Image 1 (tube, rainbow over the protein chains, first blue to last red):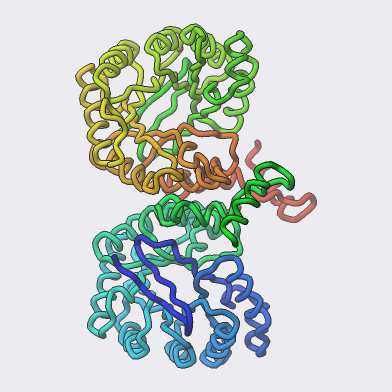
Image 2 (image 1 turned 180 degrees about the vertical axis):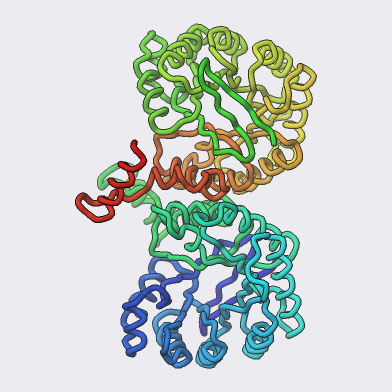
Amino acid sequence: MTDTVISSASKEVVIGFDRPFVIIGERINPTGRKLLAEEMKNGDFSRVESDTLAQVAAGAHMLDVNAGIPLADEPAILAQAIKLVQSLTDVPLSIDSSIIEALEAGLAVYEGKALVNSVTGEDEVMERVLPLVAKHGAAVVAISNDETGISEDPDVRFEVARKIVNRAADHGIPKADVVVDPLVMPIGAMRTAGRQVFRLVRRLQDELGVNSTCGASNVSFGLPNRAGVNGAFLAMAIASGLTSAITNPLESEIMQSIRAADVLTGNDADCAKWIKQYREPVPEGSSARRRENRRRGASST
Amino acid sequence: MTDTVISSASKEVVIGFDRPFVIIGERINPTGRKLLAEEMKNGDFSRVESDTLAQVAAGAHMLDVNAGIPLADEPAILAQAIKLVQSLTDVPLSIDSSIIEALEAGLAVYEGKALVNSVTGEDEVMERVLPLVAKHGAAVVAISNDETGISEDPDVRFEVARKIVNRAADHGIPKADVVVDPLVMPIGAMRTAGRQVFRLVRRLQDELGVNSTCGASNVSFGLPNRAGVNGAFLAMAIASGLTSAITNPLESEIMQSIRAADVLTGNDADCAKWIKQYREPVPEGSSARRRENRRRGASST
């Protein structure tokens, strides 16, 4: 049992082995979104606002916020985006940047316990990011690559993850606050990409006892019907032990797959969430509808 | 590596760990299909014919044939159904009955190496079914329950599977010809039903080295949006080691999930089947379409 608690000023989300899967909305990210990048650079955050509301309405438990725009003042833009998003929703955030100053600026304005995305196994990166994470009492996403690059061998990536967990401990960060990203490669380019992740997340849970997350959409890069691949990938990764993912909650197929996986791991008690989401509408005037009305009346809701 | 080879007079299907998942069409089964039962009993096999063609067209690699109709001459009807199905398609069959005389009648007319569905771990059943399987050189589905019933403990079910594999060996049936059914219970009734299956199929592959199959649809009994649950269940079971399933190939969500799982286990080489199935149509007159036409012309197809 390893519970990773992330919070906003008023709400906690827990990532854990025997808990419902945690969905971190990926949309607030200008990478590959030219229009959003241009708008954010010019101080127009209307799309950040609509992406926030839409993802939370679709069922995201957390939101990732990234402001990686070339030739822009990323620390200032990221801090501004985080303040805006926290004014709109109480779901906790993942503060996403590869620039230490941007992470600093984001953490400085964040209310609650953030998830810092991310640290790698590179010494220089660990020594800059981990003290910042420790200072703010945050949690951190640990990406399982280091100076030697991304190994195709999941057992090498496991050792990188172990190294980061140990280094985090040196900085006073408990392993419950390290969420490992096994790194998802495109299956179209690397036939073993799926099996690598399944093997790695299983070892992360069984041997290292840490939670995991991943950028799930990457697996289907270049393929048609990407949501179909992403949905199956998430179900398979959850069966292997994945406990959260940064993905697109606006894709109904992905959300259905995650909800079904929660049912099948036994983490949707009495299948209550599934039944509520997918219950067939009861026709007006039917005896089932009358029973339903009586039931609702009886429980006085 | 354990390859279970099933064949018709002219076609082989191989169930194995590093092979595409084998889909056994479940539709030719009068259980719970009143109209089909009535028709088959009266010698009308038109629906068996249409179910055969539709399932093969939808991508079934094998078909299960069951003629379990109360108060009917099951051996005669099963033999007749098998002859008819084999006259319509060359996909290999699973001969499905709990009555030994029906299995005998089915095997007597079957051309090729059939999959006999099924034997349990009950002594009396093993001693009647296994000699028949051995005599015909068939393969057999081993259901992991015995005289004591169906255990909720997957490790007890594993021991039942081991007992059947050993008993089959006593009858000269190699373990490659024993395909274990872990028994899928409804998740709505038993919260651990999914985890039980995932754990059991993993042990079946890792420790016993046998292939597995299951009646996948049972898991969603009583729930809304059953195809959504079944699709995620199959992807998760495949990630855990399941190598075939008796399911409904006419459900496009189930087929998509299995095809995606093949991509993600690396068993759809170059994602070729996935791309062929889900490639976006290229608009007429577009430059992409012109390139496509040139490509097709060049490869002279």
